[in-house]
Length: 263
Image (cartoon, rainbow, N blue to C red; front, top):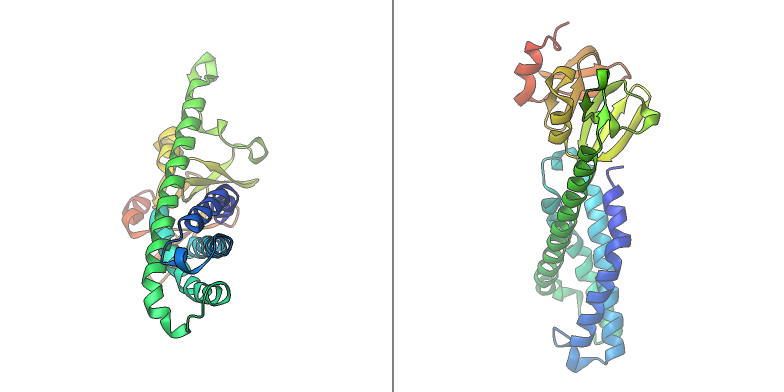
């Protein structure tokens, strides 16, 4: 599910990638206007653009699955994905250029790579910024929608309950929340699902009495912990459904004071 935003980006951004390829084909940058006809330029720039963008998405998916990059922003991961994508893209450009325009030896890769990397990283960062802004806008609209719909609580008191966001099939037996980019994975006794919400906003709606944050990316419900595992001085909370949640150093003292690390 971490890969879902990037897979959706293929469908949403492919028209922009194709459009950029067409524009570059018409303009004919890097001396291609004098050395190739319009049709050849269109095929060349559209093909290199689509291949590079697919490799950017592949790199972003790879990075999203590595824990060491969890603290990186979406834009930071997209920049690194663009840089990684520029490595195979450099050789693809050489092959396409040799096939469509004129031969270029592979020994020219060190001179082609910096230009490819600059373009790939720049475009990846711009698209990352656009996508991040869109996610913020959708999340803000969702919060406004939920806030505008009153729900009658006990004795007719109007409440703004976090559980209105939870899919009915998951029930209300909340165990943990896990941050995944701008999405939030809800773990209950019946399963898990993703919603578009930031963790800090979810904690604000839940309040301190329902549980506590144990990690930058994790919140655990008050009665969800059944045992504790320790390895190399690090604590891991084992929840009622078998889920294992890491306790980070920055939250360890608070978790210890709550008695969750005892036994």
